[in-house]
Image (cartoon, rainbow, N blue to C red):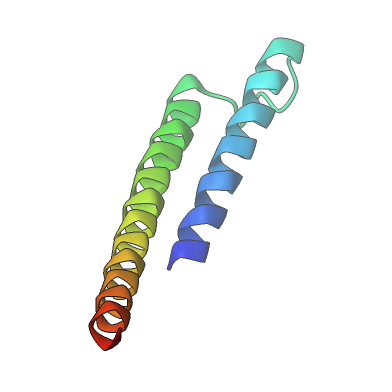
Length: 77
């Protein structure tokens, strides 16, 4: 899931960049609309947000696991 979100996020921002550059040089005009570029930015923001939420959740779980291991080691000593 995380990898998919990261890929979608990266693809959407790259497509946005290509379309933005194409708007400056007047090529790919059939696919180049402000609405489509705005949708790509929204996709990027949403997928990035979800990716980082999952990342923080995973890291918090790992921190809790390491804290429990540390407490267990302290009790043994």
